[in-house]
Image (cartoon, rainbow, N blue to C red; front, side, top):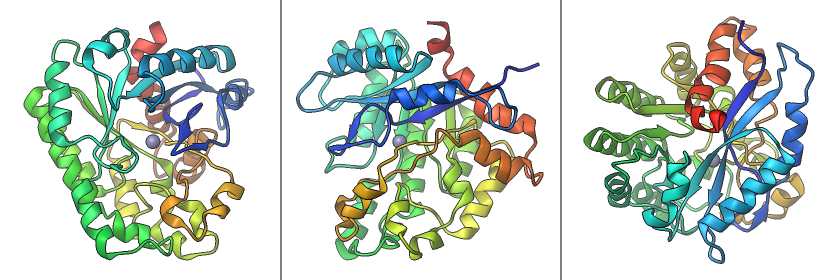
Length: 330
Ligand SMILES: [Zn+2]
């Protein structure tokens, strides 16, 4: 019998994002680990969490601070994903040798966390001995910038035009090419485009070091939500996709293309989001999800028979457990 519980490999917690506090912290996550064992609403067993290098502290110091906080307030396994902005391989080597991942972004130039494809290739070359897994947020920044030059961000739906599926497809394709060329492990986060998912399927055939995730919100909602009331509260990146894409993504999940489901938990209070309702480019984006990762998918996919309970357990327990091997034996 498999154990009862789930892992969420993609959780933003304990960090400020774009200068804003997240709605919750490690303490709130602990409550999810203490749930009564209920097969339809199992306890959280561990997470993947992010550490981003800020302007005022070294990545190593930030990591040490967050790791202490997680041990004290959460007390379960954490797989760390590190985003350097200035740190070198030499500086990060002890953390990476200890099993931490890198998390890189092909976009978000203004936030200072953008990596060019050349930079990603350089990390791969410099980490050719450790083969540190690189998580990549894939949206081609040039495409996003070009569209953003003529498409303003004055209504929530504009977000879908400014950050289209083709931007994700392009970045995924190029990052996969790098992974294959350098035989370097890559994990593509929050896949929201069916075409990108198919690129990944194909790339996996030539290199086994490629994994990927999608998030429940891309399987549950479509872009029409961004035309409805309080749509600004539902902004996330990549944005919700069109209904046909959402449907295809569910089919691809049924076909087993995704290694895991992960929430991309990144919650901000409604009060904070409402303050930026008329200033969308600066609105803190992101959705909660760690609490409902298993139950939302159980309700939406297992109950109506779209996937089996065994598939859901593979996607939320066995799959992430495999990706978190290092953190679980540490
Ligand atoms: Zn994220």
